[in-house]
Image 1 (cartoon, one colour):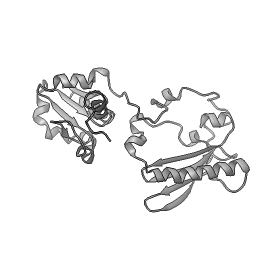
Image 2: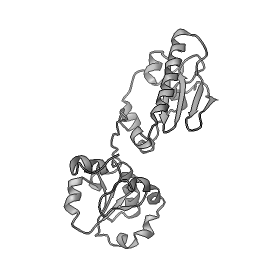
Image 3: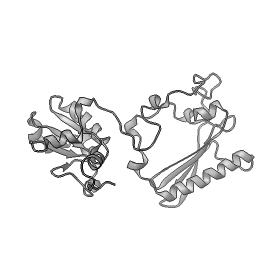
Image 4: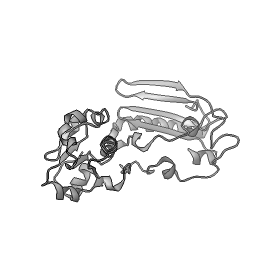
Length: 255
């Protein structure tokens, strides 16, 4: 978005998640907002769902991508009415298209206002606290001392410990590590785990290891649990089940 504004180019933007898609044109015309007008502050990294975790129906990207191409042609030729200042929402499950009007250009926008604060591209990975690629990049939410790798876990498997898998139940049923117990992340954040594991939590010498599919949700869980039980040894398994597959057992199923 910032690059388009600095070059005075419109941005034909499309997105897709699961069965839904969105399309709009930013920075096209005197009153049309840019992306930063609407979203001046990036969301926290753990609130951003990538394609691998959220899932995207391929046909949805086909629909939105084709419409993006049409918008680009209209912008380039100046023919027809574009989605500048409007947002197209596509509900693929029900085959419904909706148009909503977006608010106009912000006078306080840091990049497209009359007195912009941003006049050149910045370090966007630092600004957003995440990688530019959507290629399932790992998050780093907790200190390294609160994390262990798969080989450290192998060393402790023969000792008493509690292994908590925070994936949703339907994913837990697809595959799991032996002796792991399923406590979905939502139940962790709702503190439902406290009563369920009262005996284990009472024993501060009993290590608790938390894992998920890729090692992101498990960090959120460990962060929450450590705040509740700061003296307990609660550790995140770095890389989750994907790390187990690639570093320990190639036959372990991943999805």
